[in-house]
Amino acid sequence: MSDFMLWLHANYIRPQLEAVPPEDYRAHFDLVKNELPHSIWAELDKCLEFTAIHAFALGFRTGKGLARLIPAGSSEARSSEPRAAALTPQ
Image (cartoon, rainbow, N blue to C red):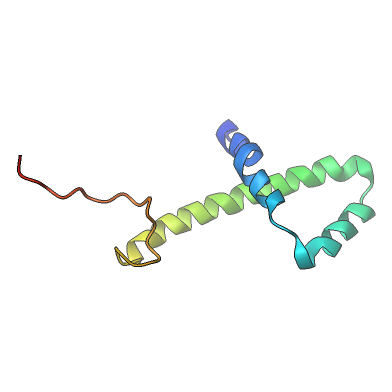
């Protein structure tokens, strides 16, 4: 895994995931943590890191491919999507 993806996970993906309330999943997370010995928690965190990075990359790749299917100017179109500049006479 690239250093950039590890940095992205530590500085963007993980903080985003931690900001989301687990709601109905809190009991499941607690169950897993309580069943594992404390010495294995680091390995669980690495598995979660791997999964989160690849889920982010998958979303990025599939989202990029879907952008061409969204009509320009629609409410679903992203404002950060590159647009061709209108030619103006100079």
